[in-house]
Structure formats: C-alpha cells, structure tokens
Length: 336
Image (cartoon, rainbow, N blue to C red; front, side, top):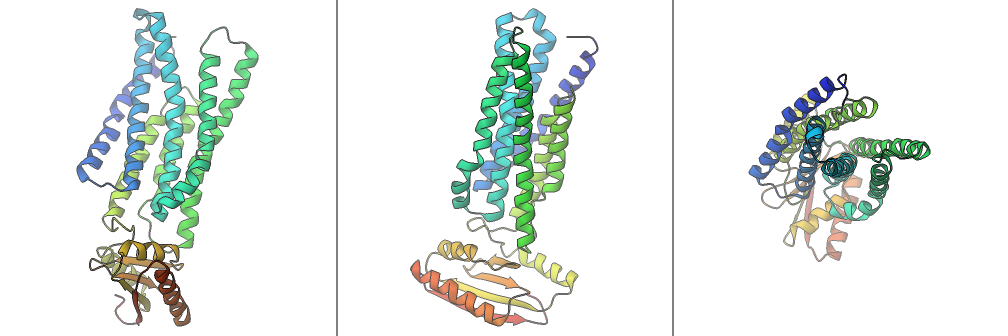
C-alpha cells in the first residue's frame, strides 16, 4: 500500500466503522416492533445485506493494513471472498429494493411471484460478471486483453445496478401518478443517498456505497413505519387511523364533496379485500375498518360509475362464494 493511499484507506475504515451501528440498530428496531409482513421481511434482508457489506469493507481495509504479517494464502482467500461480496451484495440489495417497492405499492404476492423470475435475470448476469472479474483480475499474470474485457463487463455491471434503482423509481412514480393515494414510502431521499454513494465509489477510490445504502435504509425505515401506522396489516389498505389524515387533507384542499362506497361481507374479508384491490378505481382510497367494513372513497366517481363498480364487485364476490352488502352516499358538507 502506497503512503499516498494510506489516509484514504484509514478514513474509509473509520467511516464504515461509524456507520455500522445504523443498519444494526434498524434491524433491532424491526425485531422489537414485531411486524411480520412480507415487505418488512424484504426490508430486513436488505438491512442484513447492508451489515454484511459494511463488514466486508471493514475486513478488507483491515487486511490491507496488516497483510504484511498475514499468510499470503490467507490474504488471497480473504481478497477473493471480499471481492465477491462487494460485487454481489449491492446487486442483492438493489434487486430486493425493486421487489420491495413493487410489493409495498401493490400489497400482492402474486405480482412478486410473476415478476420475480424476470426481475432476477439481470442479477444473475451480474453475479456471473462478478465471479469472472474475481477469477480474472486477482492473479497478477492476467493478460491485458482479459483485463480490458473485465473493464467492459464492469460497465455492464454498473448498468444492471442502474436498472434496478431507476426501475424502482419508475414503478413508484407510475403508481403514484395512477392513484391519488399519499404514499408514505418516499423514494427520493433514499435513492439519492444510495446513488451518490454508489457513483462516488464507482468513479473514485473512495468506497462509500455501503454508507449510501445505510443512509438510504434509514430514510426508508422512517417512511415505512410511519406508513404502517396507517395501514391495516392483513389487507394493506389504510386503517381507521388514516381517517384523521383524510380529514386534514380534505380541509387543506377544501374538499367537501366525497363519494363513499361501503362494502361488507359475512364471508372471508380477505377475499373481498383482494377483489377490491384488483378493481380499485383510480384516484380512490380504501379504508379497512375495525368492524370488517371497507370504505372506498373518491372525489371523482360519478353515480353511474359507482353503480357499475358495485355491480362488478358483487359479481366477482359471487364467483368467490361471497354475499356482499354495498351502499353508497355523497358527503357534501363534512367530508368524513
């Protein structure tokens, strides 16, 4: 290690040690809160990957400082393992991030099952590139032409990473444009921190992508659990706590003309929830009340559309063996 690089390595080591408590404490917080939803499981895996990434940097940088007193074979093995982890773990995180965003927006495992095999194709291509990179570059005798191929493949690896991060933001933006539901998962601060960390790491010798992930996951944790306080766990719809937020929103926007459609069934509530989820009107909000009733609220639905929507839900309910009670009203003075 050259003397010029020593301050950079020392600062990187200190930075990673300082940032390590962030994902560790977030993991402890997730476990303490006891949520067992699919999106929280995915988020927890990303936190674990962040811890693994930070530990990889700490281990690798530590080995750089003490390699003179270590066995050469041990240094080589550690270098191979660290190189693979530093290549694969970020790919796992950004791939999971896209899946996490999809599930958070749709609350449907069917979407994940259908898209997961396709979404993971770039990831596996990236894994192959990382393995080839490790095998080809670590030996000092690697021919120049092979190193040039590796350089090109690493640019492809960069594009795969961009595909996942940009893809998650496109999915989020498209969905929030389609529905007028306030999404408590705010991607901008998360994506900005992750992207800055990755770009600085990709184009400089200062490796802070793990720091970017940690900061991004910190933002995500805040918005996720803020959102979950307003969301009913089984269905993914807003709960009664969110009614107060709707009142504030209505007062702020001077909205006092809201169509409210009420649905209830003596059968399985989750089946009714899935039907409503599949046929939810644009620019609407669905509230799952504690008594099993669902409220579909909209400022734009005309009476004829409401009647067709009720008929559609009842028709699909019959196919599922559900008897569905439905009524609707327009609240003109007090919004809710």
